[in-house]
Length: 65
Image 1 (tube, rainbow, N blue to C red):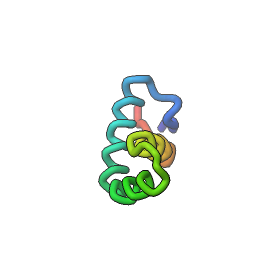
Image 2 (image 1 turned 180 degrees about the horizontal axis):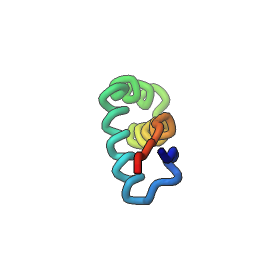
Image 3 (image 1 turned 120 degrees about the vertical axis):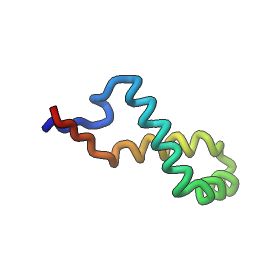
Image 4 (image 1 turned 60 degrees about the horizontal axis):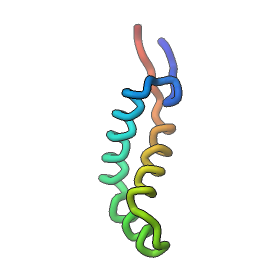
């Protein structure tokens, strides 16, 4: 088995995982993030992207070859 983290993956895979992570974060925390962005007058999309990136580092990538 090979254990990798997000930084070890190619750019295409990173973009796809970032997109999927963004959907997951928006599904789980979308309303909370919208409320937070309104209260603190921040851009919702920026917050969503930051949280999606943070979420990616919680994944463990394991490949069987």
